[in-house]
Picture (cartoon, rainbow, N blue to C red):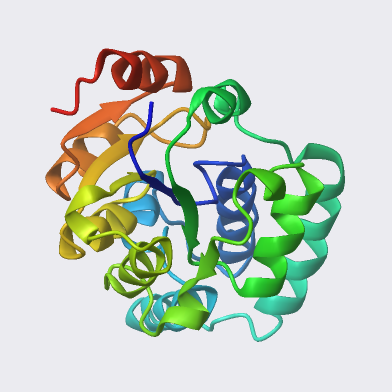
Length: 224
C-alpha cells in the first residue's frame, strides 16, 4: 500500500469536526439563528476559522440577526472542555496507517498550533511528522487548492500522484482543484444523510464510510 495519501485532519483523522459543528450550531442557535445540518455542512464546514467567522457573520446579517461578538470566546471554552474528554482518532485509522507504506501528509484548515496539539493529543503526530501543513502556511484556505499543492510539493510528488481523503465538500473541491484523486470519508460520525452525495458532487471519485473499506481498496490496488 504505497499510494501517496494526503489526509484532511478534522473529521478524517480525528473526531473533532463533529465537536466543532455541535458547538458552532449551539452558539448560533442562542443568537436566534437555526441552521440546518445539511446547509451548515455544505456552506461552513472545511474552511479556515477566520473564513467561518466571516461567513457566519454574513449569514446573520442576511437574516437580520446580530452576530454574537463573543462567538470566539464561547467557542474556545466549549471546544476545549469537550476535547479534554471526547477527542480521539477515528476508529480504524491507526490500523490503516500501520499498514500504509507510502508517503503521507496532513493538509488541514486548522491553524498550525491547534493542529499540532490535536495530533499530539491523539497520538497521531508521529505517523505524519514532519509533513503536517495548515492553510495558514499555504496561502488561501479551502476550497482553494493551496494547502494540498503545498503538501505535494513538500512530499516531492506531482499532485496527480496523490490521493486526498476529505470529509467536507469544500475540502473535496480543494483536492479536485489541486489535480488530485479525492476520496470522500463519512466515517467520523458527524455527517448527515446527504454528506456522501455532496462529496460526490464536489468531485470525490468514491466515498467510504470506514477505514476498513479504504484499506481493502488499497490492498486490492483499486484506485477507481
